[in-house]
Image (cartoon, rainbow, N blue to C red; front, side, top):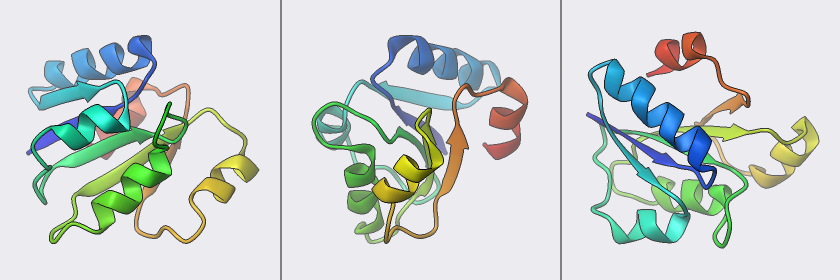
Length: 112
């Protein structure tokens, strides 16, 4: 199992990467959807942490792409946006977890 972090804020992605690796997990970071799409597709037992507000292709676009995979991985969306903005972006998307930024180490350790 690996954790893939799709996050354009280097501070957030680096913090998540160091925390997850400190937990003994294999983790990768991607600054945008396009670089994530260029990598090897995730496995069904992987977890994807994706920021909803990405440059270029949105986090919701990443989630929709992931849900089209034969065996989709677990998806956790993260955002600092208002609840109404989040709901607007993920309208029609089911089966994901949503966490609000700022993220705490307790919450991250509980979800992965």
